[in-house]
Image (cartoon, rainbow, N blue to C red):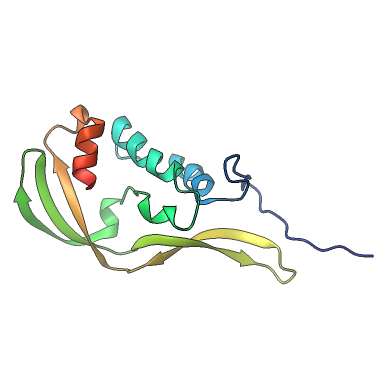
Length: 142
């Protein structure tokens, strides 16, 4: 008797916390592909991503958005931390993941499903990004 099953693509490990190929693993695999240029900011963003195991948690994960993914950037105001801008983001936020399959049903590729392309985002240009603390990071985000 033949048996059939899904073949896991190379590089997709099972998460030890949720026992599934979860969002946190996918985010972690992409850490090498981006940086803000500030180790503290990178760690803050990565921590939110490592907490995003489920479909519901992915909405709380922050992403570093490269400047070339933004357009129509407009100055809004200045506060004690720096300047605030508004921009449109070409890609939009991650809402889920999806898989590409081959003819036999094997998983070939795991991609992000995004929502709201060209969505508005707020940008913060910090006066002292090297002095960023957890409390300040929370204030910037929320």
